Structure formats: structure tokens, C-alpha cells
Picture 1 (cartoon, rainbow, N blue to C red):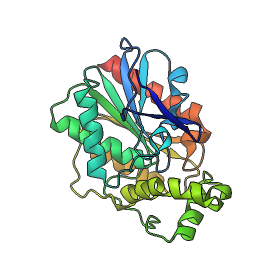
Picture 2: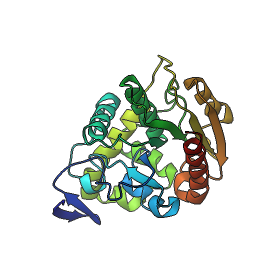
Picture 3: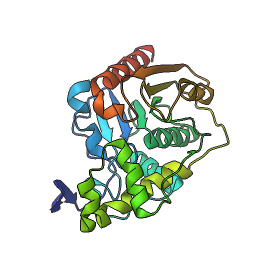
Picture 4: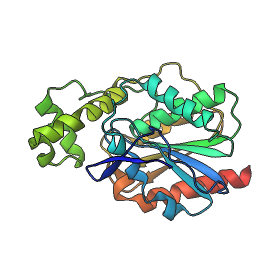
Length: 264
């Protein structure tokens, strides 16, 4: 069992540093590995297990530098991040039963790159991926913010309504949190894959109806990244609809997983 190291911002800092918690119920039918948006963490998916039911094991990624891992150095490189996650899932035999990958915004690129790793390794238990609020891998961020000076960087973050002014005004707190935010946005905004590698599993793509960062055409570009089936759906809300309209997201996710499992 993990041992508590210390309490910080309401999270428990743990000694053994894993991306994924131990799965308590190994009898659940499939696993859903979940990857958050830039600046988010595993807590984004805190309510998903109860809402999705017992047939799906929800496995949110705990990123270094975030939440209970806040005292660790964050990851600044997509290849390093994906390699670390892939090795942990594989080495802990977490890929020995059917699974899906879900990613929102930055997480959609993580899910795609991770799916490629599993397919290159001949993994047959990967049944599909869900890319949420993320443009296709060949699309680089048009207006990056990761390199902006501190004040401008925070101003741009505030547009997502997840960074209250008090956070920036408390310089001691901001000094702790800023590196992880910078790292996340660096990974998200410098990523661009021009190899156009196709997956051999189906893709479900989700988009917010009010998301100014993503058009319907952007969403449909994901169709070119699979030689299997492609599904897409609009979700009510802005870019972070995963937080504001969770039930709607989970309805689509559950329908997709159930359909793929029944077909399998």
C-alpha cells in the first residue's frame, strides 16, 4: 500500500510515483486510460468510475508536477511522456485485458501517440481511442502561449476560466504551479506529427459546440488517422466541455465502448 508523504493543496503526496493507481477490481470488463488537458490532472476524471459503472475500469493518468505529484519535475517532451506511460502500462501488465484510450485536448495527442506505440508492439487488446477537443496530429498550435512572459502567459490561461487571479497574485503558490503549466503547454503547442501514421482501431472524436479553437472540419480530420471506423459527435459547451458537460461526454463514451465491445 502507498504511504502518505505529506499533504499539499488538498492532495496527498505519495512516495511511490506512478502514473496509474492500482486497479482494485480486476474483474471489470475493460479499462479506460484517461489523459487530461494541459494544466489538468487525474482529478478531472474523479467522478467517472461511478458514472460509467462496474464494466469499465477508469484509469486516469497522474502526471508529474500535478496534484499529488506536484513536488516532482514535470515532463516537457511528448516522446518522454508517452514512453514513460507506455512502459508503465506494459510493465505492470495493465494491457493484458481489453482497453481504450481517452484524451482531452493535449491528452488527445498523448492518446494517439500511445496508441501508435501499442500497435507497433503488436498489442491486440487496444480496442479504440477517443480524442476530445484535440485537433489532428499534423495541426500545430497557431497561437502558442508557452513562451510568453509571466503576466501574458497567465492572462492567456485565464481565458479558460480555470486560473483565478488569486493564484497569480500569490507569488509563492504561482512559483510552484507555473512550471507544470509551462511544461504542459510546451508539450501541447510544440507537438506536430507530419508522418500521418494511421491507426488500425476505430476513433471517436468529440468537439464542443462553442469551442472557438476547433471547427467541425478540424474534428473530421481525425478520420484520416485510422483505417478502421470513425465516429464523431458534438458536445454542448466550450473547449473544456469535459468539465462542464461531463454527463454528455460519458454518454458518448459509454455508447462507443459498448458498441466496440459487443462487436468484439
